Length: 275
Image (cartoon, one colour):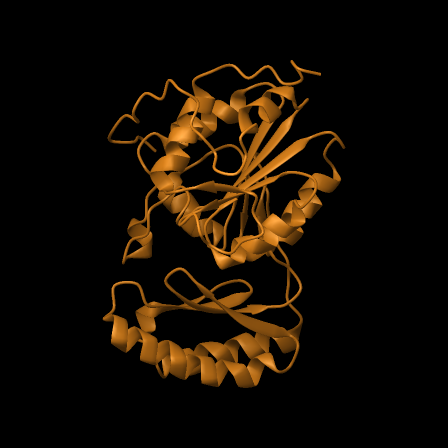
């Protein structure tokens, strides 16, 4: 996909809040796995989720980083993979979607983790409940979850709708098969069993023991990924610096993420140079 604008040139290494030695650790690492959330990290939020495109320059930077020696990039999102592909086109790298229930390999291979019948029925019930409260176009059925979107709605009306849906979904979450969590722009009920942290742990299982994993994300659902990296890698939270999080690093915005990626892409990282 051709991006309409060129990202600003970033010459000085961007600061990663809370991780003063970030760039030193990247250089010293024999190899790096960079995991990136999509919405609120690469792409600013939009009231129409299919208009939430990555910032100009971000995807070119990601491709360049992925092409660097001993560096691999993967996108890990709650979105269905089909939506991600629509918004960014072919990347030639790993994409995990639907909170770890969908997986696409760099060569285009696709896998979806099937749900037991009981979980599928609960999600069907959750969708019906949401449709009685939300307009149909704001209710999204994914491979392993149901999301109700409120972005762009009047704040008072949105809060009332979410409150009513929480009461309905609470009856389903008592089953220990599903749970619901807020996300930036709505409420989502998900099948228990897999998270963004699960898929990252699985990908790292086949990686070298000395690889440096880095995850960048903005949402409550990204906390699972941050926990998966605890003591092993670097989690970076996007958003307010005072947010409560398991991440050790911080970036203010999608623009700050884009600047970090652009700087990384514009220099040759010789991994293991300090070892």
